[in-house]
Image (cartoon, rainbow, N blue to C red; front, side, top):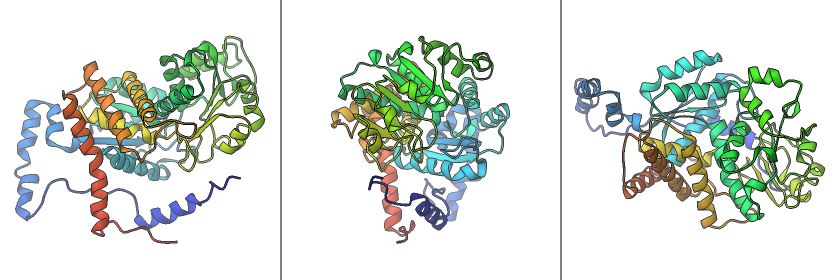
Length: 444
């Protein structure tokens, strides 16, 4: 096993979560220097912005409240990381961590909300009822195929952006990294044979994005828990009724009706994008060895990738990416959602669209290429604040171009605002730690 696997992240996380008793808290944005100030921030003064919103319309709430910069991180806990259906309360640490990433990386005020409600229509009703309190909604860790229905319905009925990070977030960052991996291996996406391992939220969306960027369905194979999808599979009629999103993939891909499992799907492939179940051993070395020359292997399962990176390399992989930060080429949703939300919230967008996500993926790839790509750097990292600025601006500009923005900003105005909001949390963190209000991590 590689020496890169060092720390016991699970034990360290348990210790520090208990020590800090959570990862976020509410902090004032306005000054309070004397009790009389509450006559402004609360009663009686607060009645005036309330009257203005009532008279002028709900959009004024973006001017008078935190709504302009707020997002709800909403989950039912039915598909949490690699842990599965662990319930709302057990999923709360993940949603809270998501909120921390929103703030630190994108300057977005995010609130973790876990619902003890797994019925999709009731879930939709609850989220719809919360719309007036937030500027955007981030859906998180909801099981497939229910997550597709929930996302599509909420996108239809809400007047604020709705995003499901397990779908769009994973797909966006995957595509951003893949664009550079294809450049390094001299491939054109329209001629590339691609295998997707896993047909849940992430890869169903990745499949859709791949098509938009030029990948051809006839060059693609998709494997679920029952094997390779194709139009003549025994469960095809059941899929048509219960999972039309996966059914569409089954009838569009694999015209040669290739049958079997992961091994058969990898044979002769140029690229494998795995977003299935934690490994190792889900993908075996000898299967990677049967792929085409200089294969690209994305093994994105957490906390353990479907195949260890060094095993994939030993089998001939030219480029390997995983979902982990302790290996090169981390395919991490955190490179996507903070910037995407920064972009849509800055211009107070009414919707998120695939065009905005494509702009974000292209911005990620372009920034990484400009700052130097190689086999162990096909995508930037969370330490590179400039990546988030570029990506947020691309999303905001696309929202304005498409007519979904409540605000219109010049490019210079947009850049100045985005940059300030992304830099602000790091300054806040330093000030709080310097003041001792956030204690240092205990040693040991």
